[in-house]
Image 1 (tube, rainbow over the protein chains, first blue to last red):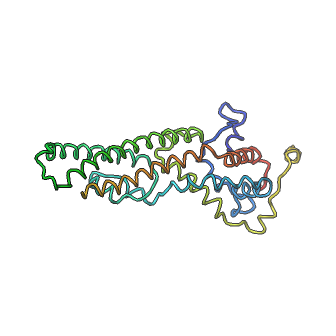
Image 2: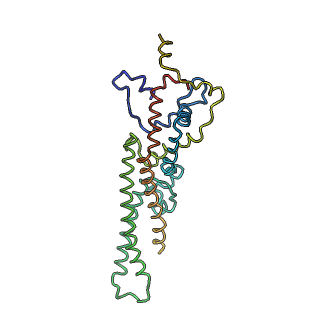
Image 3: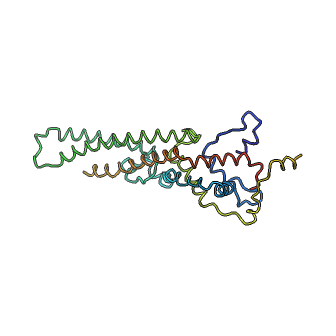
Length: 221
Length: 53
């Protein structure tokens, strides 16, 4: 953003938009008077004093922040050394469509194997014992599983489409953000920084002044 | 039967995961106050050379 100002007269300057990931750089822009004061403090102060209603953005970001569970990511990723069944067993609640896609493929493969098994072993119903409830339960389960897998596929498509729209709206793309988890981590980090920002020192507080541009021009001439 | 129980246990997790991504993304698409905050941030970035933090 500072670069936008400095490059304002150049062919790359005066950019109007920015990527949402840059909001976490607000804490990197520190005051010349006190390093404990950052641009995030100034933004928060501006919002609190002049437009307190805007702080409702914290409610709006609650679900995106909650969708990020970075600590669980490694456990969720299936690997060549970890069988799919084990990775599914270890899975912890985190929101990443990559995991869902992988799991859906595995589910479908396992379901095909189940279908083949049922057709091979229980295809001839007349040969089964009338009191044997196992085949009936498994055939019923097969139908239920088919419906659940179809519903999961639909939810995945809906989630992916909505996610892509959000990604575009916030100036990112699949090249800059490689996973849903990474995207939502941006909001988690920002919400955490905004809520827990340390208070500036009393001395730094005295320096919060807006210098009129006219004064600056007078000083530089 | 064990497969059935595992299937039912696991698919719930992934249904929940996909739903959470959908709801989170939808929240971002309908976030007027966050959009307002980003406007303020853009405004501040333009004023930054004139601001003493």
